[in-house]
Amino acid sequence: MKISLLIATSDDDYTEHLSNLLSDKYKDTFFVSVCSSSQSLTDLLLVSDFDAALLETQLIRDTDISPIKMPLLLWDESDSGSAAQKNHTIIRKYQRVSAIASSILEYYASFSAGEGAPDAGKASITAVWSPCGGVGKTTVALANAIKASLSGKKALYLNMEHFSSSPAYFNDSGRSISSVFEMLERNEGNLKMLIRGIACKDCSVTYFCCPDNFDDMNILTPENLALLVEACTELTDELVIDMSSLCDERARRIFELADDIFLVADTSATALKKLNQFTTQNNVFERVRAKTTIIANKGASVSIPLVDSVVSLPPVYHANESAVYKALSAYSFRRSTL
Image (cartoon, rainbow, N blue to C red; front, side, top):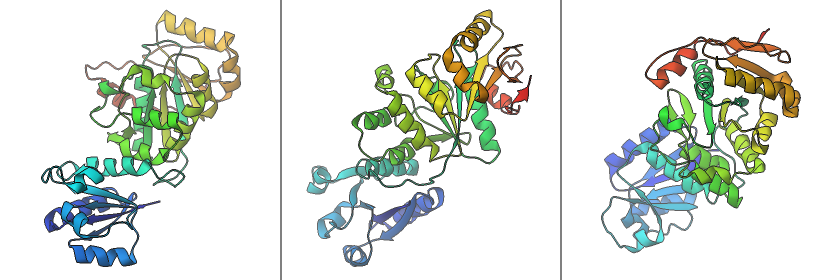
C-alpha cells in the first residue's frame, strides 16, 4: 500500500522541494498532495481522504482537520507553547527529508495495525551462523548481501548478534531497532510499517541501527523473532540474518525459517573443532543439513563428512573492515559439491 500524504503549508518553495523529493525517492511509499491555504485545504478535505498530513500551525488553527487520519504539525521551531504544538505530534520542518519520511512511517505504524506495507514481496532468507566467534561471520553475511544488491535485488541485512557489530560497518546514527523489539513485546501496531520507517541504507544494502541496550535483544522470544523475520521478508528480495554464536531456541527458529544456512569457519583449530561438534553431535544439524553450506573463510580447508557442499573464500587483508566484505562479494556463494 501507499500512504496518502498531504503537505499543507504556505511556504511554496519548501512545499515544492519536499513534495518533489518524497515523490521521487519514496514513490513506492507515499502518494503526495499539496495545498497552501486554509480555503484550499478545506476544499481538498471535502473530496479527498488522507492517511497523514504535514500541516503548518496556522492551517491547523483555521481549518477543520478531523477528516485526516494522522495530522502532524510541521513545526519550524517558532510559536512555542501553542495549542497546536501541545495537541499534535510534531515533525520538525528543517531536517533531512529521509528523517521526515522515517518519522511519518514510524508514527503511522503505531496505529495502523493490520494494514499492508509498501513494497510487499517475499524474500529469500539466508542465515549466517558459526558456533565460534571471530571467524568472519559478519563479513560473510555482508558480502552476501552486497552480492545480492549488485545482482539487482533489494537486500536487507538483519543483525541478531547480542552485541551488534553493525556500527563497525554502517552509520549508526538512525533510529534504533529497539523500537521494533518493543512493538513485538507489546504485540500491537503495524510492524512492517515501523520496520520500513526506521530502516537505513548504505552501499545498496538496507540495515537497522543497533539496539539502545544489550537487554533489548533479550526480550525477543522465538515467536517474536519469527514475526520480525516474516515482516522483513515482505520488504525486500534477499534477507541476510547475521546470527549470534549461540544455538538456543531463537537460533533454531531462524534455522527453520531460513532457505539457506551458511556455517562459517576459518583456519583456527577452535573454529574447526566446534564446527565438527555441531555437525556430529547436535540433533539440530540433521534437520537443516540439506540447506546448509560450509563457508571456508580466510583460505581455510574444511572437510565435514556430513556436509554436501562448501564455498571457499580467500584471505583478504585490509585495514578498512568494509573493504573486506566488498572484496568478498565478488566471489560466488553458490553451493558446490565436495
